[in-house]
Length: 191
Image 1 (cartoon, rainbow, N blue to C red):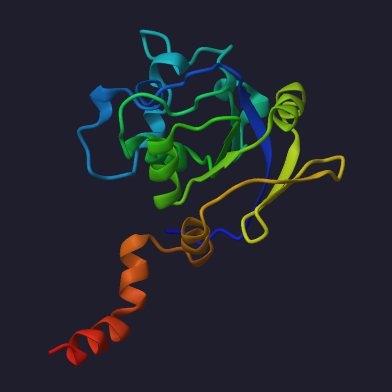
Image 2 (image 1 turned 90 degrees about the vertical axis):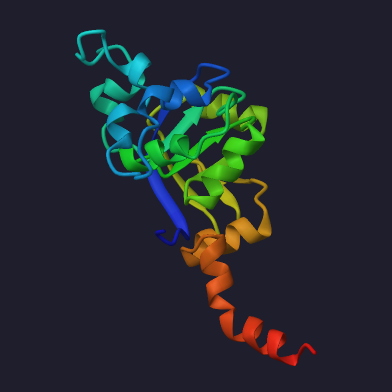
């Protein structure tokens, strides 16, 4: 997992509410345990015509969305079934952070565990972001802040353990492996 201390990028907006995990990565693409290639099918049924041609009006297909690493979504992002493939698909596509006023708990947990920063902001900040697509933002993971182009700094909540793992570029297993000596010492001291 790549360490994340900050992310600076333009935003791409998907203002739709209740974007569920099956919309993010349809179930028929869950036949792999590899993350590679999942980005090709990100938002597949929304992004592509039945013949496979890109829908020109879909947000991620527009020229101004190319290279954007921050997705601003409507309320209740990642609802529906639990699947790690959803954050994997976003990451494989090149999205490094998602922002909304509400992110489904399981999706948020899966995202943070896999290196996708999930940021929950207040209604006012969210409204500003939706009204200004393509804005250049800086998200500071260390300080848990989001800096808007006008210089306004907004704090966002993040679990301390998740923040530590993102900054260090490790997952839960990586955290345990960092502490193998202490674990072994503890086990040796037990009768």
